[in-house]
Image 1 (cartoon, rainbow, N blue to C red):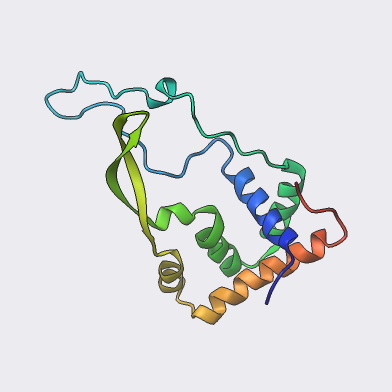
Image 2 (cartoon, rainbow, N blue to C red; image 1 turned 90 degrees about the vertical axis):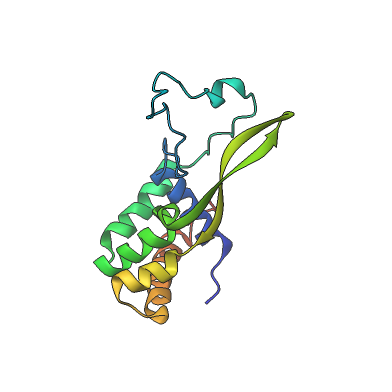
Length: 152
């Protein structure tokens, strides 16, 4: 089923609210655990003026979506965690380097995502059941926000 764009906007707003202050990618080690244990990792954030902007979200609308989430059955909430709020836990990353301002720097690159397959295996559900759980959430969001303006 196709949903209006405001449904996806509300879900994205809710995801940003859930992750406020968090970063889902793997962390760079802060120190060396070998014989060179005195080594400290460079502080990439202070060296870079092009840090990604903070995501702006509407907390009131996100809390309305959270209330919907809290009312849903346990299986649906579990599927939503795999699909939306904890999706990076099932991404596959590889260590690589990229050119940044004329210098090479280490980065983590996402090379795959197995969340849907992993969710179906862990939760012992079919592809159709997984999709039905997502639809249930989207329908409830549609009902909640259909009279409101689109979340900006």
